[in-house]
Image (cartoon, rainbow, N blue to C red):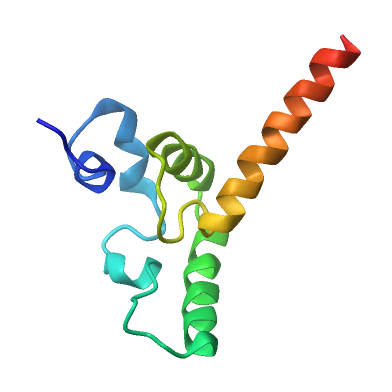
Length: 104
């Protein structure tokens, strides 16, 4: 049986214990996902900025980001990054790792 990454996130698993300490714990998840119904780009940007502000003060931000990358999250703000920023982060991390290998 396949489950979505969101379904896995909201199940009780030892590796997801970080969720209890998340700054967004108890908040409406919709706050972190831009709805397709929001046509106004500025409104979407403001909503994203608000979500990122919550992430900025979160003590488990790194764990959240790692989860999103591992789960292949394609939508929403996770660990303070939107999908495009997460893709850039992964590319940068891979490039850094390759550079380190060449130097070694």
